[in-house]
Length: 123
Image (cartoon, rainbow, N blue to C red; front, side, top):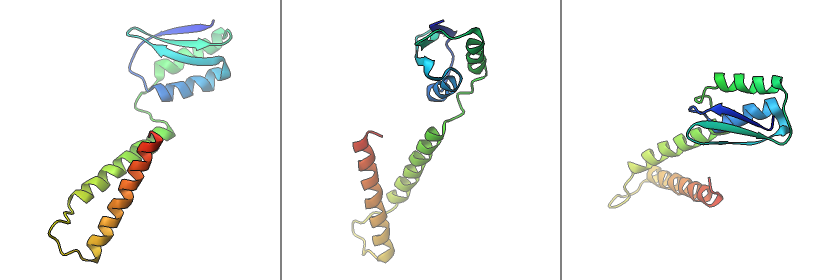
């Protein structure tokens, strides 16, 4: 079988792709979806046992289970949101800045540099 067609449902495509690749290895070329189906493409035929393991994995797939990379990205986004919120409380206009305010401004500049660098890298 070169293609395996499964009924569409809500998925975490990154997580599911990793799971399918653990089962099918390099035979899995990729997957595509439309409104009704998820289609897996293979470069060589897979046996019935592999197809069944993939089908079982799909049936038990939990889209809320994130990959390690997705967890790290979520934590990075949450951390930046926290830093933005903390930065929002500092208004330098009209303030006689003390050392703590200067440190907070320095942290804000560093955070903004990190965000700009992430944008340049396409993150």
